[in-house]
Image (cartoon, rainbow, N blue to C red; front, side, top):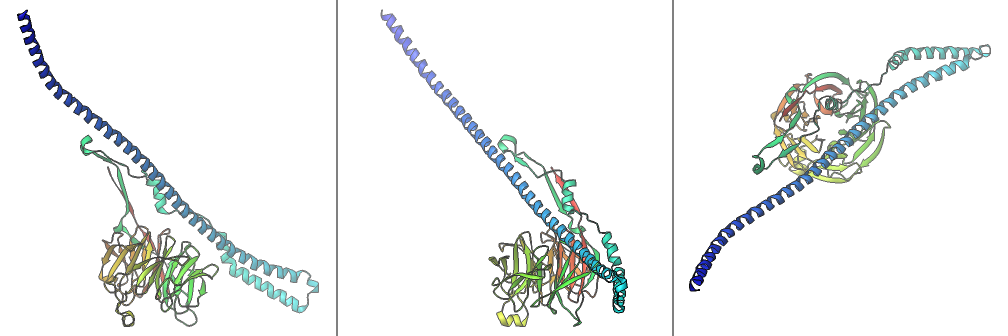
Length: 487
């Protein structure tokens, strides 16, 4: 009985020791298993969150693509409506001109028919009147014969913007899509497909199209301050001396003039038929004039504190140089939405300006394009590019930019390159690249040409430059486009 108990105790003691040893190993094992399971659960949660994030990102990308497409459609619709308005305008001009000739001919014909209706009752004086009327009709027919021949050959066609045609013919991708994988999962692999389309700055060139002679009034002199090339190809010139706007057709032929109550200084196109005009010293008001009806449709007052100088229209806003202080952003109903101070280093060396203010920024011309504003100084030979909030994006200095007492006229092409010229630049045109880093010079081609205004039409790729002595030159702007791909 005692031996049994002793064995039992030893056995129980041995079993107890084994149990303790197993529990320690089990604890470590269970602890490790628990950690691995928790780690796996965390990984699953991270993956689920990543999937959820990817889903949200995917939804956002789809939304962005659709928003971009909607904006693109809206912009194309806007461009289409502009073109259709231009077509309607040109059609009305052509048909009105033909109607005028038809009415003139028909009136003279009816008169002759009435006189000749009863020859037996004609008195000698009436017979003479009949012959005179007949001769008048013959002269009218003879003088209008060439015009009628030209009108018979009128044709209507469409020349599409080469940029849009390039999209249809060359664009193989809607955009660039990138997926960046985390380094833990796939060793920093980035899968992308990118493309870049740009205009070749070095390949920009000018081709002479035509010279325009602006008629001079009986006074024998004029002073052309500025010019605008409209989207319907019409050209408008501001004559300060004779207080008028001079309108020429796209062919270069004189169309008509509009007399103004004040001498115009700077002009900008608001749409196909409307211009905004600033009058310079001592005037501050801006007039909106319809060049078809020849009426002043509205006057914007109180938008500048001093006198209005350079003026430009972009994205529904007017940008006006408020002499000596700032560029004012103004809506067409006259509300000032922003005021952008002129660069403080741009000061005038004119005695009258110095006496008036002591430190007057010397800026007369400006241009606005795609939420950017450009102007040049006459004192520090610098061209400035700002966004429409007043933040300076870049500046470019060159001794050729200088002007004696007025800043040079400038325009911007469809790729953001800035074109400017002044009569002290040895008769050459300066083009500064859209990033403000490069400059090239193109010959103006006329030694006695003293440029005073410049205008660029993005749709037609045409550049108009006017001389203050009633001359202007129209150029075609050629810009090669290259496409660079990487993957």
